[in-house]
Length: 277
Image 1 (cartoon, helix red, strand yellow):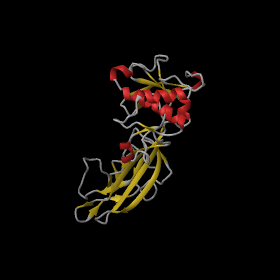
Image 2 (image 1 turned 135 degrees about the horizontal axis):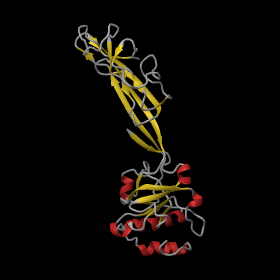
Image 3 (image 1 turned 180 degrees about the horizontal axis):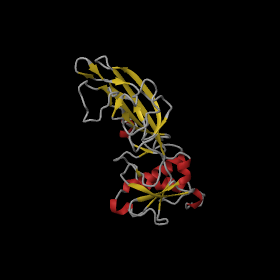
Image 4 (image 1 turned 30 degrees about the vertical axis):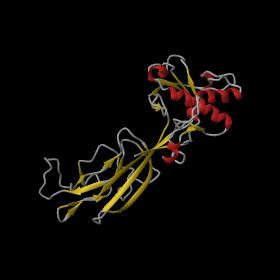
């Protein structure tokens, strides 16, 4: 299972420890324009307002991967399971899902769109000759179903299929599904200072507040989140990031360094902004 961001960005405010942790090569977020304000009441109680136009442009969009795997197993000394497409007249206890998207080898092909009703790996096990299966078995039933369905709450596209053998020489397969995740109401987001919140509502750019330069925010968080949690460094990081955007370079947010809030405020004044942003 993996979540891969479409457009990861390096943070404008970084630290020396982040260099050692390879955050420059493997960033885990995006730089957003954030307004700290009350607006329409939909960002109260730790919820946030997000710009729908920014979402449409790809903000915080990600890919979700999940891997399903299955292998044939030996049943005693003679019988063994088989990865194949189950036939309705031969196989007992077929699942409620759809078997139509399975190829002849019992596996869904890459590029096929699947949903929670679909079987993605077909597998059967032979029935013992003397097994009655609680009276459900008929004369034509020679196998029982052991297939793997997609998770009922998920959908997506089959991204990759691998077929090989395991250490016992038995057939082994992995199927990876891919889903595009787009931010929506109820999704949770957080800053690096732990200021987390869920989306309460999304507004188009024309319905968002704007500053004197006509810039609209990507996110609006509630000002009540700041004093109670006392994340003062979060505010300093915001100022440093703004300076970094104006200067075109990264800011050093490493703790216990000589950089002060007054130093950052002086740089903001130099660019024509109020000293606190």
